[in-house]
Image 1 (tube, rainbow, N blue to C red):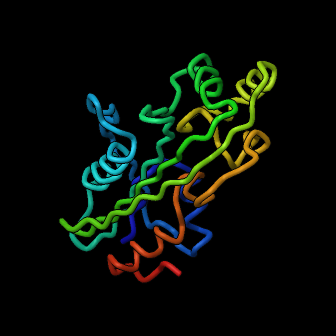
Image 2 (cartoon, one colour):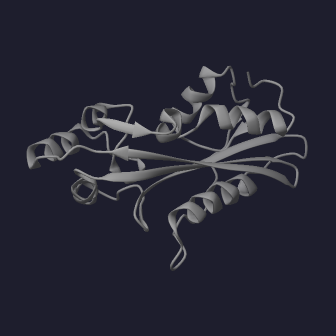
Length: 188
């Protein structure tokens, strides 16, 4: 059985692009608070691994979990709690480059395969009106860094370097490779 350990509709849609359809979806419930002094990339990898290990599965089940983190320098910009925090994130990102890190963990029994992908994103300089318009769209909800490149925020991002699907939330080439390494035969 293939289990997607994520409630993200974007991850389910991305998997469908490579012909992978989960048999079950089981979002894990873990504490996603960064450890004191934890840097973004190790944090993201730890989250994906902890999620994969937290999903209840049988020994032959293949479990896929991921975590996406937006990092501005050493600062982790998680999912904003409210519109005020989302606007603050956009102000921080405005006119700057930042990293989007997506870590993937695939687990079968006690074995875990892991990979992370780092992409660079440049957000254009945003006016207060542009920030407010985006906040009003509600598209920021549930998204690391307070934006989703696959929605209205695409108009705010003139340049990326790296994996577009990784920025959305699941780098497909790397995910397919990990699934194949774990013995899953459904990945193209």
